[in-house]
Length: 119
Image 1: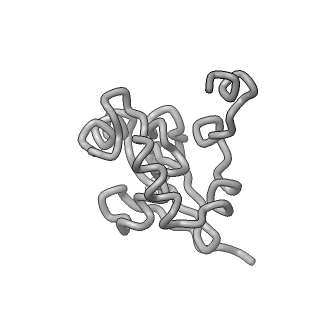
Image 2: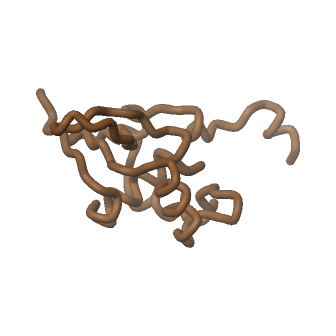
């Protein structure tokens, strides 16, 4: 199945898609941006995000990505998605598919043996 490709500004995404993006990129967006050339031949930056139904390229600059996270109360002062927000969104969205489609080091929440020994 060919998924529709959508290029959109972050601000124009539905709240659901924004929340799912945060789950996939819980440590912010700026270090996950890729460059692309738009239909006018201009070089732009965007954040890739794939769902079961769509492939998104969310237009933003590195500066804008940092501003989004800094202004969003879901992220702490270090730009990390708050634990309670992760828990809330994880309950709301069964995003195993989205996490698998967008696997990256930022969304690997598995505990290591060392983490488990700290109990």
